[in-house]
Length: 196
Image (cartoon, rainbow, N blue to C red; front, side, top):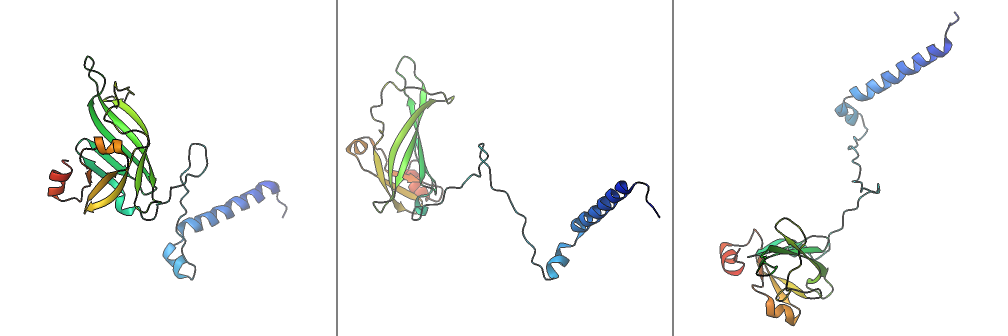
């Protein structure tokens, strides 16, 4: 028997064969496949991709930093230390733009975390001042505020409580409460140490 359209027939065989193989793969019982002597492999998840198209990397946790990681509060300020050694602080400053045009503002500070001295040291690396709408403002005076280069040695004072020990004379003069509490601190610490 001679086929009138050999190319069409060959294509039909390929499509039917491929469909059967595909259907068999989709309908296969994963339990039966796993028990037949082949180990089931977990689905592969693609790594997150940055806008540039390169795989995103998750910063590694720094050994020895774990007891200090988290969000720590005192009245008017919030310190966040991340496992990768980055840290930020938000300080509510109240009016910061002169008597005639009072604008409430917030200082957003960044830190460099240094573990080389044995205990974590937080060193201020930059500040940004914003109003309630998030717009950048310039305070009339920076007197009484931390400066780049100021810093703290950090230690665990009690469960859920950090103590910040100023490294500079400037910080010693302006630091209010040296304590910062997280959610695990007891009621006494929240009221008496952190006023939060």
